[in-house]
Image 1 (cartoon, rainbow, N blue to C red):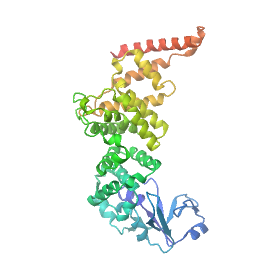
Image 2: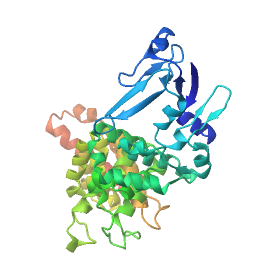
Image 3: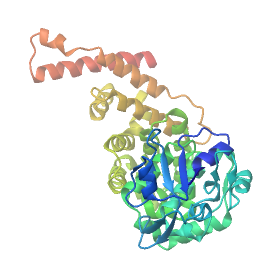
Image 4: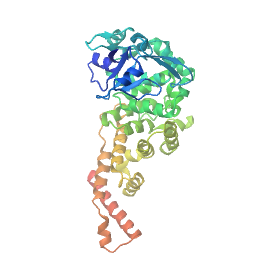
Length: 408
């Protein structure tokens, strides 16, 4: 029985990156022996065990054989006869197919160290194509390691395109797709994830209403970059700078989906794209089973981002209507995410990357002033029911007017 540190922990150690989690590979053992040693089995389909003390994962060396569709159609074989080379061969990328023994010796039968040095993502074997989730997983790695200047080996990129063309991604379940998307959005460069999905054709399969934005023009006076797809990626990059919250980053991807519905003869104008895009946001959230908290911000940004951009021009009554629609009174934390994403939209344009966004400061100040108004003041005046609501709205309008005057 031999135990090796394996996979991502070895890769990140060689890159001098923090190791988030450690996975271990057990060679020369079987399930009965692991259970006898006190390990707790957690995998029904795969022989994975938790260490009795550290609770870290220890997996028996195994081979896999494709039998069925998607990423679940595998039959695995695990016992003491499976070698470490056999186990590493089934892994996705050469840089993930390395193991390390207790004394620090690297077991690297598929030249992962060289690919790590050359900054190349390369598949270990043709078996890569048996799991369609690997297209998304590789794109997510690219989003994580973009600062290291990794590139995809040409033969691996071609294999990914072939997998997409063969319809393999259609076998993925919504929860697995969203899991990869949400993890990719949390990476340092999620725009790289989207770019690779576009390059392989995967974005057109998974999210066609986003993919179609490339090639759709915007008015040059507002968008020096012109292209709606490029603008969306610039907004995403700005969102990454402003917030780690994936709700902000997802909303950045959704905010201009309505432009994909604009008739060509109306280009580059996109009047009404905010409301027309709402159904597309609903559709993709339903398709991916996006959490309601994330969906809510995406819908708000889609519908009201132009209101936010024009906040200093809006009548106080319009601002108050927006506040009510966004439910800022009960969900001020959502409103802050909304403002951050709108700022990202404003600065996600060629030449505007460092521009200030006083609209957000104004709306924050207006909300803060409104929240100082207490309902009990009107109750003490003897008002009831609708009269309280009317008086509260009037007081809030006055507060917004006063704040606006200080910004003009």
